[in-house]
Image (cartoon, rainbow, N blue to C red):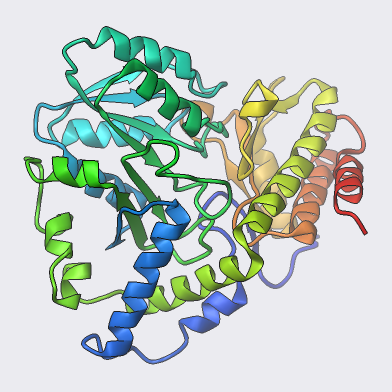
Length: 395
């Protein structure tokens, strides 16, 4: 017996659920890639991506996922042997650092904890020790989708400035862009990157990079540059060079529609929607945690992200069983624990194309699964989420 039918609902942190309008935008013939319409599409997207990153710097579009965008950032500003400082708060900054190491950089990890965000004071202290400025770049993620950590990028930028260190500050905004405030220029970020498949509600396959003038100056002497990723190549006058070849036309149609939807909603409202729905999830988990089995992976409430919540499961209970139940019986796909949390946690995404019925439905299915699997939990998690939204979303 199951209670699922029709479209499966993704509650995973990427790819996220795509709006029907975005899917429809792709259902049209390809453009002439040499046409004025193609040029206008590219120019509008590059300008709007710079707006989303909140930078006066240049943006670039790659036919790649986030891992490709990582490589695009590294190859454009580093030379082999350069030292990179990675700020740990989960899996993804570490993964970016691993890519840098494989490309020939020297990598140092400022050890953190999968249960907490980056500590800006620790960053400042390490940079003050680097008196000869051997560290050339600093890598951090605004949100780590494995741990669920939210890192205060503004405070980290201030710590770097306070230390008087010239390293480039480079930030992964894959799980935050278009969902949470991001102010590249105001926060002292030199290079930022993101991807299409999360808050930007577009199919996987597009990677985005934004770079300020300081990073582009460093780029001129970077020794890792390769033709496909190279910013200089992509700044050429011929349109096809913007994509190092044929443009990903249908993904661009989708992205254009998705960004239009974000701007129509207005970014401040988008950010508020994510904050309210993220808190609704946290209210439910707080209640469930009363059963002494479920809990937040991120210990401090202020360090939990508005785009994904990682829920740990103790006492010998299996989060994979809950994942299977939700998917096979109810048609909701939860995120599994990954990295250090494999087999110990599940993840609830609340990013991109999400609204109250989607979140309340997901929470309801989780509560059904907890009941069916006889997993101890506090009673009334969904009610707590409803209570929060009823208080916060005024009539």
